[in-house]
Length: 46
Image (cartoon, rainbow, N blue to C red; front, top):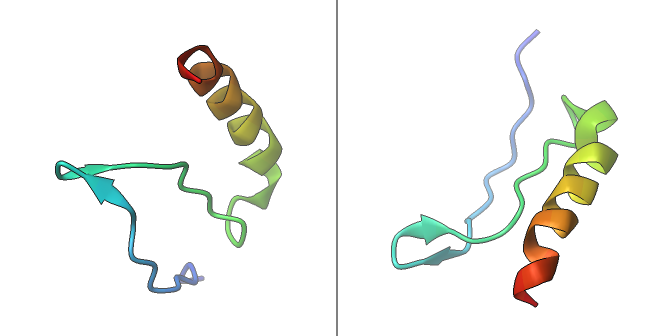
């Protein structure tokens, strides 16, 4: 099975990706865990 992909233009700053990439089509079972980890990682900087 070939993974589905949509063309998404990532946000970048100084050539580095800004944000949280999620694959809710092929890895939707990992989305909640990834969001929780991302929030924990960025919360100290907010």
